[in-house]
Image (cartoon, rainbow, N blue to C red; front, top):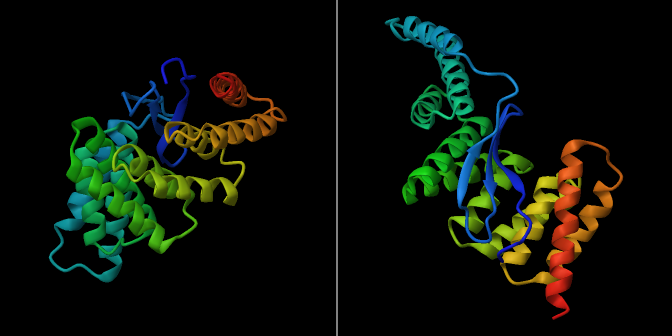
Length: 239
């Protein structure tokens, strides 16, 4: 697979501010890099949230309203830590959010993001398993949570060796929302790495056609990557 067009595929998106990307290097994930956030999370923001939490948690009697407010603050704090790439405090805050009643899809998704990235960086299988659990929990609550589906598919394919299931999930995303171009590009890559060049070629050709109607730097990058991958696969199949 050496020489196959490298492309950054966004993985585990935390809102729209930050993304972890996988650089495909001809085999399983080689490197993780951080994209620059649209808005930098300042330490001052985090400090203000922690100060407010400290005041609220010191109260002897906590009303349901206060407990919910604490849960929301922990949820938001965890998201801020995720945006900074600080996985340990993110996990701590998000677990506390769950403990204060925030058993909602976005908290499980954020936990999956943190566990998946920490597990990938540390090569920790337990963290990867926890990430899968929280992605699946988010999807149980919100079956159409496409970012959770996408992150789960990436983990299943590259970290759990559950390739058939990963391909099925990524294909569902592509059909559910054809404009989710990251998923379609990843699906093409999945098929290629799963030694099914015919299906990979078909995915890239369809995606190239759709991207050819768009005019943006990102579309140009993906379109060029598709073109090069189409040429390579065509050449390989002709041998």
